[in-house]
Length: 380
Image: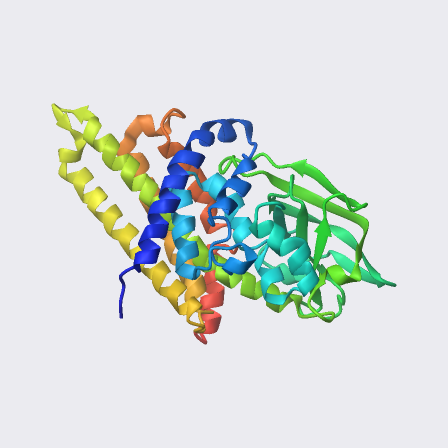
């Protein structure tokens, strides 16, 4: 088994790292303070093949594999998890269902413009009373002639406040729990589709996250993803499975940033006449952090390779997210401890990674849900 990245992977890592440092890093402070995403990054990233690196070149993508996408996600999260999240949503949740299951017209009208950064997408699954239990969503889509009329509410939607379209999960047949769900593409400006509010979060503040409301929202029947009613839950499951591997890279990027910031601080902070990195207690913490980051990265890449090779990763995908998200909490805690009181001050960036990373055991499937899925897959 070869664990070495290809030359193409290494070149891509260097390129996306330069992009992150030159194009993303200067925008972080303002974006975090204003809670406004720098939307020009969609086009800038797309122009260099960074926005959707896993889609075919002929569509405008980077033509890479899952490892390529994980490298992109890790490097952007190393700079800022909030900004990275908006770009991640575009490369995965908001486009993958169309790529995998959409019609040629849907690909031309939505997917290709999204890959090029000309349209911004969002993915609407979670509802005020339906999070981990996705099959309990209440949003309905009722066929009426050549249209579907959608009614319901979605919450915690990344890119929701400014998206050009949102992929909405809704029941076409509520009598069939889970199975009766379909996905629909709803465009901005469609009557009945409104952004009820932009949500104020404790972390990941450079993401714009919204609550979306659909009231007698009429969309063309051709905007349904898939050829028949039903089957949307399987489309969701496949999309989330890919995202759980991606989350391994997200956690790794944040962990890498925390390690780098903490090593730098420990070298500069002097107590008892010497830099605190010289104290064994801190050196041991840093050694453990570095070990854990390497293990997170290696396991994520292994499962990403399996996914690209077409192997069944319905067990390993949730394992990646559970393992990396939970381990990240320990890394961030140790990073904050070494920073001491200064780590708790807003002027030090470690506090932002600490706040941002806390979300990762909750979003896109809680750690508890990952454990349930893994146990079920293992037959426990």
